[in-house]
Image 1: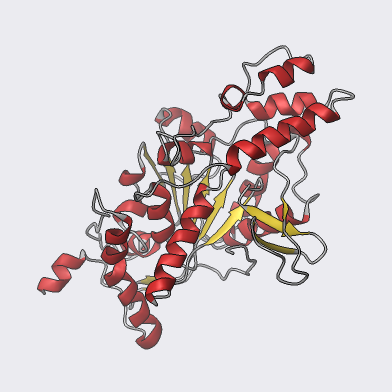
Image 2: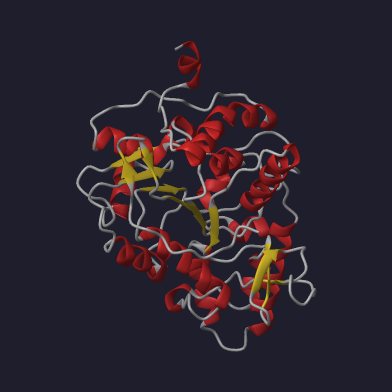
Length: 364
């Protein structure tokens, strides 16, 4: 289970080997799952956004029963309003149950997805922090891990952090153990319990729940030394002041943020996106893409921090090694092997990365 805490070192780039040990952080919002599964999951269950979640999950009647009159807001804002009303415990519990039931039925399509690409475009030093409740990222993690384990070609995956909980994660509160939702506690062998998903956003306390607290601790640790941040489909709603303020406070303490890059993947207008994230951006160190395939993750998989450091610190631009289109999952795994072999060689001998497309390397 990819839930772990570790202390991050300061960014480290070795110009001799062109290896950058600094972390790349990817922050996911609901827009990332929507972009990754535009036609829904394996069974065509739609991926809801916060502005259409009430309709897709079927919460209208429950909210009307609680005398909620306006539905033209973000769901989190409406839920926050509901939490402030007296005597609504039954309604709140019913909403939680419907949301949990809706997301737990989701499954991955068989074909290669953006989440498969995302996970395998990062290395052990990196972090994916998600605000999403759906289990699709975790399912992609699991199937890729098992696929490589089956072949005997073991690789290390990025850490995952579930900042608002996730239906694919379970916990044992007594033993402070987290794992896959269907698993048993590794200490007491009891079934793991669901994690909390819903919080009133105007009074959100990420330290009130031990699991959520540990997930935010992971993000804080990585932010202190991050060299590259990709924000994928996350709008940082104004009402969720706590989340954005936590990230900004830690980011301001990052000693190398003046060299780092902010990458935004979103379909919103560029001006709106820049305005949302300008507090995190240093000078012109940012880029905006409307699709994942335009991102550094897709163009320079597993080498994003190396390419950035090589270009900005060494003034040596790197050629793209973009993920080919229309691959199957198995074909994508095979395509990654030269990159993985290079990483394995580095760990054994210290031989550096080439930062060139591998078809050209073979010809040299």
